Length: 320
Ligand SMILES: Cc1cc2nc3c(=O)[nH]c(=O)nc-3n(C[C@H](O)[C@H](O)[C@H](O)COP(=O)(O)OP(=O)(O)OC[C@H]3O[C@@H](n4cnc5c(N)ncnc54)[C@H](O)[C@@H]3O)c2cc1C
Figure: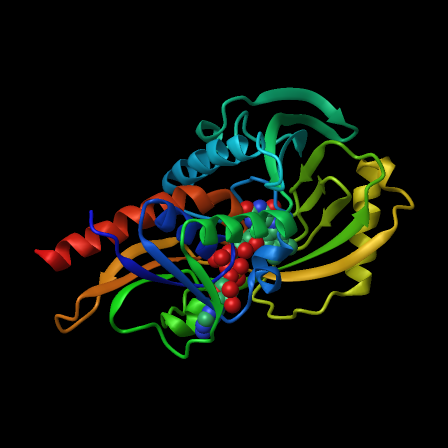
């Protein structure tokens, strides 16, 4: 296949992963982004592999499975920022035996009474990406494969050539998609106090609790406020998050607070991954890839594979 010049709009985890996949497949990938990687929603992510607030279940399971494989492989390489850690999701009496995304992970054990008040839980090993390091790893790979990253705000998507739209929540404006909406998430970063395992407790839909240890710190969340655009951390919410987390993970007691962060998850009834040829016989088109909700990291490599296929099909149809 003749190399194609592709403009990728967005430098979050979705845009960068797509750009790396395209560049490493031999295409010219140029990322244009209003916010550079460390300024994006992706930089706020916890970022534990976990299919959360993203649909439809069948595609999400397949994309997540692929990403699990890739991230697990990256965890074996130094400097990627990815680690694989054991952990447990605490469940109430109503929970099913297995999660709907069970097929995406190689091993999962149901454990009885993992904590007081929780009759069972799911124990499994999951990748965690330390986003400060991982986003830099993606940029380095992109540049090594001949791609570029440029800060550039676009008032609209390019109307010619091959474009990947990975602009996250901004696709409300850029793609005119009113079905996208924010699900606000607040987290507290604390210094490491020896926490080794991740923990999730999500019985309250608006207050999912997660503790995600990394090398030097622990990300503790969180919230899921549907429809909220508020990017300011709320001190009372932070106190409540830490109190709930400490009750389940006593090692967090007294941990030094390093930062308060808020991000807006790009929620949509279903992830949009589809190619739309430009109208009026103009060559090329737009491959939309946005709406990953609370699972942009989790879906990233699976979606990037499909974006590569869509880009190459778009080009084939133009050549015909
Ligand atoms: C608190 C919190 C915790 C999370 N935890 C996890 C987790 O544990 N695991 C997980 O998988 N996911 C998690 N997520 C979800 C994850 O962060 C998102 O799904 C992901 O960041 C979406 O990535 P994206 O690349 O689509 O969007 P973004 O990261 O928002 O990037 C969008 C890019 O598009 C650019 N852009 C927008 N408009 C324009 C324009 N007009 N011109 C040029 N560029 C433009 C932006 O500047 C940016 O570079 C979490 C989210 C939050 C808020």
